[in-house]
Length: 263
Length: 255
Image (tube, rainbow over the protein chains, first blue to last red):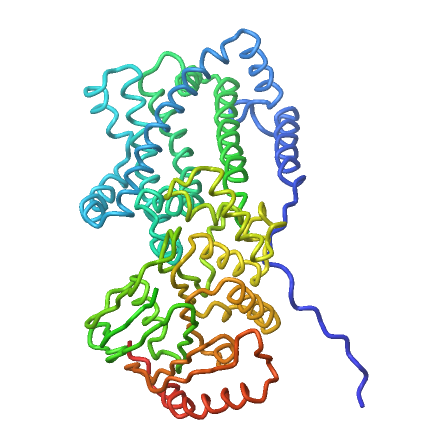
């Protein structure tokens, strides 16, 4: 008889757990490194601005009220544009998911629209909707529309058919089946599509503002860039990042609320 | 209300699944459909409730549904088919909402069926919090809420472990004894068939046809799992099915 050997543990891993502190630590360490690098002269001020200077610029933005002057128009554009795009996108997506004719007619159209860089359409939208807010809303709406449609009809296709059969077996009306079974069943997919759509919305917002706006984060960044004012440019970029994180957190909160039923 | 099938045949494309099925489900009795896997017993049940249309033959309801019946032919599914985003109460209210009964009447029905299925404490629980047996009890409560004329049960206990199955069989028997419902019960489990069936219809392998009708006279609430007469019946059924089941098992699935 040989020595008893303990059984080696081979399981574990491949199951992400939430480690909350790592994310902030990565940010802090990175910013501290840049601060040290710029202070010691290892990083020249022409390459990267000093984080403390960026922060000072940000404080100035805040105290002069310029922050809201730029942020409010941007937020309005993002809100109006993406709300238009997301609502029509969900509606069209559900129509594609439910009706064979809508699917046959609209899926190729959406596939044709999807890869077009929407920014290339901005001049056209300026002609159609005017140089001010209209064209910006349209651009953001179109940009959020296509990914929302694709995510929504995919989600409708994935709704458990046995639940729909159950609804039919109890003689539920068509309306009830769509509102009470199809739509809630598609909600997880719709919300994860919304995450992508809104990120695209932010990108298009900045692009639209760079091409023609007096106020807005995009215009602010463009101005700073053309003056080679790196502190202000970075302050603008930081605002965009924060906006992205806030949108993502907002959808996360919405998911936790709406999808509480999920296992 | 009786449910009568005449000359029912069904096929999917070139594949005949049911052939010339004649069957009567008499009011107040439970008819069990047993047969080897793939013999079309679940298809037959879907034809009975109008979820599929037979290729030929007639399925008809004879007589009137009971008073206050909201959905004469009501299913209980193997996978429960509960909406995961609705609570126990919400899942039951789902099937009442389209009838606009008024809030008081609907709440009364819900409380009644929850009490009958011993679920009153779990009104506000979500399906994910319930065990398999509880989920199926919710599905049964939902079916009872519409006061069906015929209950169509599609392998309702097959997704459950054997202890839970035993408990739920007792529950079904006591539900039936208190308020006799007409039922069609599809199962591949002969033990369930001899416990719950007044009539057991044995189907042949594909294309399914009725090979044998067995009537059991022992009243449902007097049937015990260790009853020698029932065990004899179960063995006899198995003898009748064995060859078919073996042959069905060896078939290549070319569906």
